[in-house]
Amino acid sequence: MGLQTAVLDPMTQRAPLVQRVLDGDPSAERELYDAHVDRVYRLAYRLTGDGDQAAEYTQDTFVRVFDRLGEFRGEAALSTWITSIALSMVYSGMRKVRRLRQRETDLDDAAPMPATGRRAEPDLKRKLAAAIDALPEGYRTVFVMHDVEGYTHQEIAGALGIQDGTSKAQLSRARAKLREMLAEFEGEWR
Amino acid sequence: MSDEKDGQAVGESDGQEDQLPEGLSRLAREYHEPPAVPREAIWARIRSARVDAPTVRPSDRPTVPRPPDRLTATARPSFRLPAWIGIAALLALGVAVGRWSLGAWRGSPEGPQLAAVDQPAHEGAVVRVAAAEHLSRTETLLTALRVGERGPALEAQARDLLLTTRFLLDARGVSEPRVRALLEDLELILVQLLQAQAGNGGELDLVTDALEQRDVLPRLRLALPPTL
Image (tube, rainbow over all chains, first blue to last red; front, side, top):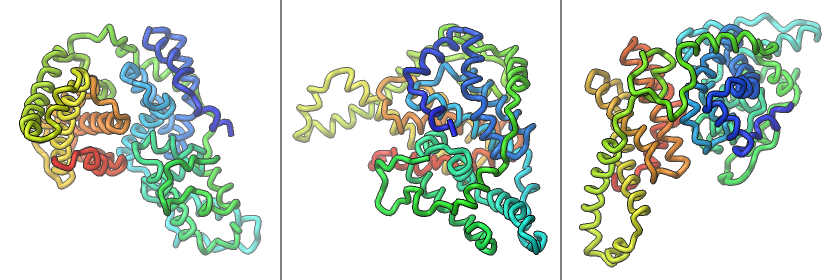
């Protein structure tokens, strides 16, 4: 994935763009938006599973970014700062909507294992999605950002305001939790 | 997807040995797989939302408050007290603490060394002392919030702390990145707290959740000097 190179936006490359936005250059605003919108939307979608919500939180993120860009001091990468705002928007919004609980699947009520292998993977995929949904919020965020979207621990730590080690520990616990929840399907994913 | 291992503590996972099996990893990457990004539609909504709130250049900050709304209320206020008032208050607090400390130091072998400190460094030290005091007060407020305290007194204190947080962010002397990051998180949480106070009580849960999510209280306590 190109995310690893996309996140490498050294301050020396971004600072002129930020300054152009602050100077009121409308094309610079669009340029900044285009450089970061995909990543923000993808993360919002991954965390919500809903296109409308993802679009709304992406909109809210960039409105906040443009409103507060003058306060961006450059200690962190611009992408990390924007991701931090995006996460704040997503979780504030999701709590309000309270859709997390509506999307949880009761694993005990799941359909019995199909006899043929052709349905096995879709069923495991659904079970995995439900297991990820059921992770505690902190573990889920780190897992989705790292294992699903490809963020580094440094980026995750910067966006969440935690230590790199905390990010790694939460990822490890998330993975352990998922293995535990999917233990009965071990034969399918080995 | 390799992570840096610098500063990895003993016993910390580097993410390699406990990776999910390839089959699960592959399926995980399909979790809530996003469609194509509706760039133009979102851009149109952003422009519409910003019609009444265009980007403000630092040099153009208006001197009257903008109408509070969900978005602008979370930004720094568009009005400011004259900077000299806030900084003078901070320096007065810091000087008061510093004079007390100096009085204690004069009796120590370190006294003469303090006199040799240059002015900018001393100013920075004063701000740092003020910052430590501020963090301590903020910790007290946030701890009270966590245990369920609410009310006008808490709101008033949050407003004061928010103002001081913003002055500290603008002042010289607080340059350590982790402290600045902590102050920025505190700013966000205090703004959310004040918004919640203005709205329904249920949103205060979001503030306490944000405290947990960002490890704010542990970070605050780590940032405080042992004597506070």
